[in-house]
Image 1 (cartoon, rainbow, N blue to C red):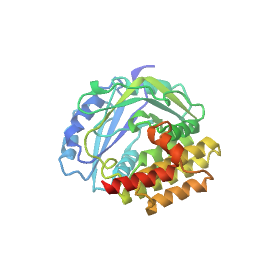
Image 2: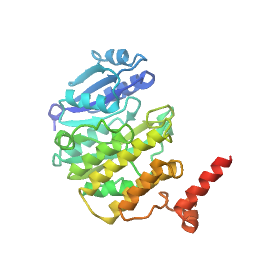
Image 3: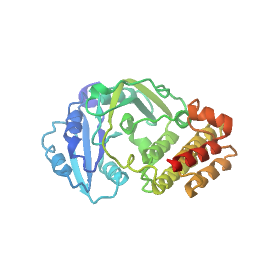
Image 4: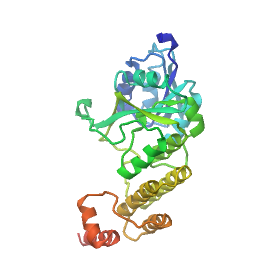
Length: 325
């Protein structure tokens, strides 16, 4: 296939106070081996100059798709991603955060796979974290690094094994995006978990691209890491898990699906104050599945103790010990 025949890829990037890393990420995209890219940046009310940094790149790009920059009042990442989606015209969509990086051939390799498959195929890839230098990323093997003929199986495995696929890993055909719809404004935590549950529920298959990588930057404050144990954040997390359960159970009634959903709710129980309203609500969701709450980290020391004294007794004793401290 000639370069001019490659389809347009739209990279949708929300930005909120990302000035510290934004230039590195834009330069990384501009250096991609794949040429037919449009980068759509939506600044979500930043106060650190992110918008001006992005604007400086508009005339620098020699990509056929170019760079489009928009600004809006602070409404949240979901809104910025939806705005970018609405402005995009590419045949394929990739979501990317403003502080992450991707390997040089990431887009090229994933598009080559998608061009040989139906328009409801989604492609994944490897990912790992880094703090200051991408050489820190070691890319350990994950159980979800494989193809899935039924994407629901991937969702079930992610829930049961506590795995995730970082947002930038996916390359998604527009037809699949149309089926999944927009990002849901109700979810401020685990919004990517909910969104890609919808995508997987609409997909025909998942293909793992072993020759592509995402470098996920950690070590700075974000909405998802700040004060995660507050009641308000845990309520939001619980709501997102309920939505994932709804999406999954609309597609399957496998016992492994129920177990994966139960594990999510058990995670909330572990993070919540013992017997608090959100704790009891998470427990009730497990009981509705006709299952008993168990420790979410199978094989851990805590799980072994729970096997002896019981999960809730463990959480109660842990709470008492924390109060004494």
